[in-house]
Amino acid sequence: MTKKFLTIVSAVMLTCLFIPSQSLAADQKIPIGNLKPATHLEKPVLEQTGGKLILSDSPETYQQEGAFYRDTAKGEFRVFWHHQNRSGETRKVAVAVTNTLDQGVKLYSEGQGASVSIYPDVAGQKALVSFLEDRFEKHYLTTLAPGESYFLIRTADDLDTVSGIAQFAAYTKHGHQPTSVTVTTLNYTDRPSHPEKMRILEGDSHTRGSFPHFNRTGVITYDPAMGNAYIRISSAESGKWSDKLPGEYEMGVDVVDGNKPVVNNGNYGVLYNFTVQIENSLHSPREVTVYENPSGGFGHYVMEWQGHIKKSGFLSYKYAWPFQELNVGADGNDYRFVTSLPGGASGPSVIYFTNTAH
Image (tube, rainbow, N blue to C red; front, top):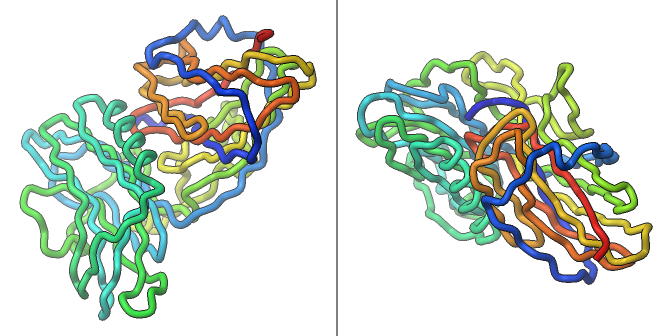
């Protein structure tokens, strides 16, 4: 995935009544200039929640068999991986969860999405959609005996990209207490008996590492009296292009390359859970349209609004995708908005709000 700086958004709604809203076509888009000028919304302070995030995106393209990344995780954790096959042959790409303890481990899934495509951003979009559809369905996978591994596998032909996001929970067989497992992302032709011992491949310019939290939660507030307005998500963590939100980024560590500190620019694998509060000081019904613009990038994007998943067509920085129309009452409403930057997509993402009289 191209590691340009991006923004990923999501939402947790305050309970309230609202007027039904409309969905828009995935391939509908307008020139970004049509939305300008626009006012910068006040930045929400994001809360970092959830368990460990294991990020595997280096080497992003590979030729040799081997492991991409490896770390331990305890209890609830999420894995994000994105790797393109340049080996000249078909390979298996997998996440392996290994029980390295002397007692049994019960392993659960809390959502899985893993897809294959010749187009990296299409693979990333499909994986994220599958994960969002599956993430509330916690189910038992298996009980791992000491030394046993669970594999989540996809087959990649030459030049195919496997992109995935999956969340697991590991508990002791007796007592059902959070326990540790070893997680390895890898590629191979013949399935290894001990993925936890497989050689780690040399990394490239992309990122691999482990981060303390896999979710962000916050509140975005928009008043139609502002006219056109925007908020930028997953911009650069630092530097002159940085417009990051408070609490958006956290430092991680690459445990296979000398425990060096790393940053997950774009927060790949992180779900943004937002409550969007529309505070209507105009006190008359308004039609609000919400757009996505990958400022400085391109890709296929995923937004979840009020529990409904929306998928964009190919979108570049020159255009904005109107993914939701809202009929907002005179007193305003609150909405749930969830998003994440898919593998292969780049940004930053800019979320625009516009409105007209209803």
